[in-house]
Each structure stands twice: as C-alpha cells, then as structure tokens.
Image (cartoon, rainbow, N blue to C red; front, top):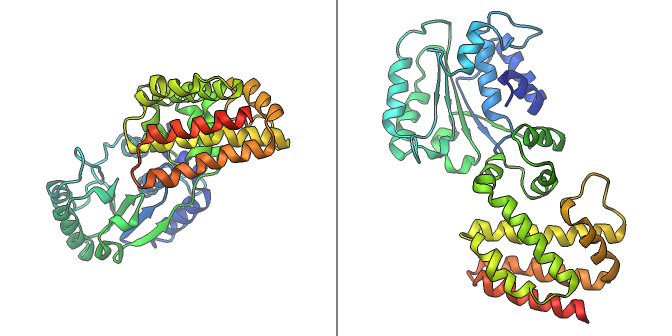
Length: 336
C-alpha cells in the first residue's frame, strides 16, 4: 500500500471512490455501508479515504490531500473520531463493539462526524453482531459506519438489511501486478499467482515460509521428469511434494499449479502464449520440449486426468494415491 491511502483507493476503485467523494461533497453519505468483494479490491482504502475526505484540511480537486495533519493521523490510526476495529485474535468480540459505542455516544472531538470502520466484519461473535445491530438501528449523531467483509452471507441478515451494500469489483490485472511487485513478490511468480487467484490474502498465506516458491520448484521438477519419461516422477511425489501438502487448501493449490503447467504447454503448442505472460519461466525449455514432442491428444488426455482430480478430492480421497495414479497414467501416455 502506498503512503497515501487515498491514492490506493483511486488506483484500485477509481469510479467507486469518485462516487463517494461526491457523496461527501453533497453531504449525502448513508449512516452505514457494507463493503464486500474479494480481498485486496480496495475496500479498506476506500473507507479510509472517505474518512480522510471528511476531515482533510487541504482538499484538492475533491480528494483528500493525504498530507495534512488530519489525513496523516487517520492513516496512522491515531484520530479520535475515526475508529478502526479488527479481530482480536480470531474474532471481533462484544467488548470491542461496546467500547466503540461508548466512544461514539460522546460528542465528536475534532469534527462534525465520527467514522467507524470494521475490518473482517464477518468475524464478529454473535454478541458483537447483536450489539452492533442495536448501534446501527439507532445511530447516535453524525456517525458513518463501514463494515468490510469478503462474504456478505456471513453477516447477520438483519445487519445487512440496515446497511447500504456496495459490491467491489475485482481489481484489474495491471493494478494486481503493481500490488504484487510492491509486496516484493518475485517477478517469476507474479503471472502464476495471478492465474490462480485474485485474493491478496491468499497470496500472502501461500507466500508464508517460502511455501509457494518451494511448491513451484517441486511441480516444475515433477513436470521435467514427465517430459523425459523418467520414472523418478513417481517417488518424487512422496519425497518432495507430499511434505508440502499439509492441508486441503494446499492440495488444491498444488493441483491448480500442475494444471497451469499443462495449460501453458498447450498454449505454446498452439502458438497462443503471449509475450511476457509465461507462468513457468524457469522451465520454459521443458514446456517447449513437451509442446514439440507430445501430440495435442496426449496433452489433452493428461490435462483431463488432472482436471478429474478435482472431483476426486471433493469426496475425500487420498491425495497422494490419486496424484501417483495420475502420474503413472501420464508416464504411460508419454511412452505410448
């Protein structure tokens, strides 16, 4: 995220942010909003940007400056009239909501409004949600609340019905690319990650402990064995892949990555792989070799085996057994 949160909002959601700036200008903000959409789509940035616009002392062209004392305090989470609440551990507890309510019953200290931002609002306990419901039903003074959640279905329907729901569209690929580069993601991983998810929180989780890099290396080597028809592809699954597959999510990520390398090989074969879009730059020689040596039918058959795995994993079959079975079939196809 940039030093100016409002700039992030303008980049990620230019139309939505402009609409909210107009609402502030016309003094037409609703008392409560629910921002939903994929993680990283700019929900927090827009909410913070609106708060900054309400208090900014140097508004420029209808947008907060991001530099004045008021904007700076809001960005530093140090403004008494802008309260940001997020999960304490795994959930947002009732005492957190009660504290905010008590603060907001006091008169605004430094402005005509108070702003309440709840991140991960779907993680409120039942008690917290009920306490918030009473607060939203009977707002005190000029309070604007922003609830942020990736999934509106996890929010109490009674709360949803009392908010104005704003669906945030996914950010564009160019913006996503910029965000990943800012986050220090390796250039060699960006295209692959963007082909697998639009969620920045998922990407952060996958990057923890260098897990994604290790998986990419293992899948690449596994594919290299297949290209050579090397039977080492079989024991390599148990030796290198399985230690990385510690839960259901990681099974799906590994499978998606395997599907991705075959998909890219098909693109090379059909001449549709665009420049600078390769997802596996470190094994481009192997994917090109496979595209040249394997027929379209062979490639499609192997890809279908992987796609069928998704259905198998839905019914709790053993991941190792299935991927070893698929690998054996692939080796047979390669040698046919």
